Every structure is written in structure tokens, then in C-alpha cells.
Length: 309
Image (cartoon, rainbow, N blue to C red):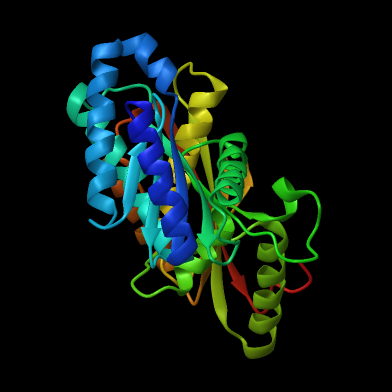
């Protein structure tokens, strides 16, 4: 936003659309942007911001409302977008920001750029703009604290828990489940530990009863160079998202540790595990920071005779 007049005009548009339309109000914040400016300079930072404006424009509708509200912050109202659509927009924005930064700085760019995006759905969570803005901001803070480069939406229901940050916001794993059910979505079902545990136990019982087969795969990411914990966490999350997109819809995954992903592969024998591993690594080698990591795979069949575990 520029002048106070322009700011007032945008707020008025947002107030009006929240009263009448259905969709999602999104707050978008660039991750690690201050560090990026310190390393590459403000001129390059301005070029990245220009690219981000273009990327946001390309991923939302012409009639949607979008504005820059701070140095590295944007606000958008997308009409007629559901939870799956919100997650797809967030994923596309993050991927395109990473691509744009590599185009400007080369494949050896060491600060992975991306965006944290908080959303709130209208009229599900009300129609008052100020209240909706506060809820979207809470979702944004949630995803920033969770580690950036992702999205979350506010989801408090009547009579729900008072601890909004922990109980009323759906983060990446929950949104991934919605994506898996959505039309056109490809990739594994990404679950939190509690849900994953239920599915895992069910699958073991199913195999034991019906003599089926499945495989389990543990993927560990290790740094090969000195880097900060923050940078390693960003790289680990990017690897997880890439793995998720590479797997089948019928596969199930969780992040078992900060640097590990555990995957269930139903109806897959050990003869195909190598193909899965190669497919993941072929995609990972296209990423600018693959040389900064060592990826290790451990696989094991789940068969009917393997009971009691």
C-alpha cells in the first residue's frame, strides 16, 4: 500500500467483500527476507518483491483483492476458494518464489526463500473484516512458529477450545489431507503422528487378516555442510513436501523426527522400493540445495507373518 488514501480504499474493499462474498482472506509473509537483504542487498530484495507481486497476481483471480501491506507482507481475498484450493495456491506461490530466487541468483542460492500464509474462510468464520483479519493473523503466526514455508487456516468452531493456536488452527498436515481428497491432487496423504498411528495399526491388522502386503520406508536427511538449524529445518521441510508430491495418493507419510519421514506404501513389495527411492532422488537433485544433504533410505516389507509389532 502507498498513501493513506490508498490504504483506506483497500481496507474498504476488503470490508465490503467480506460482507458479501465467499472465499478466503489470506495474509502472506515472506520468510527469511531480512536475512536475504543482509546477504544479497536491498536492490536484489526489491527485485524479489517485484517477482512476488507478479507471482501473487498469477495465482489469484483478476477480480480478487490483493495488496502489499508492508515491506514483505501482502493481503489477498480470493473468492470462491475452498480449503484445498487455498493449500494449492499456497504451494504454488512457495514453489514459484523459490524458482524466481534461483533465476535471479543462480542454483547455488543459499537462502531458500518462501512464504508463510495464514488464512481464514468467509463466511465460515464470520463477515467482520477486523475480526477475520485477526484470525488470519493468528493462523499466520502459527505457521511462522511451526517453521515457515507453509500455510495454515483458522478453524475455531462454536464451543471449541480456548487455546486457539493449538486447537483451532489446521496446519500443513491437516490441509494435506484435504488436498488428498480434492480433485486433481496428487501425492501422499500427510498425517500427524496420532492419525498416522491409527492408520498404521489398521493396515497391519488388515494385512494379517487378508494376507496382503505393504512396505514401510524411513527417510533420513543429514546435512553435509555446516549450516544453521533454521536453514536445515527449511531444507528438511522442502524435502518433505517434494517427497509428498512424488508419492502416490494411496501412500501415507508423517514427519517422525525433525530430519526423518516415515512412509507407508500399501500394496507395494520390496522390488518396487528402489523405483520409489530413485523417483524421489531424481526430483530432489533438481533442487538447488540437494548437494547440501545426504539422504538415506531404510525399507522393510510388512507381511502377514510379521505379526505382533
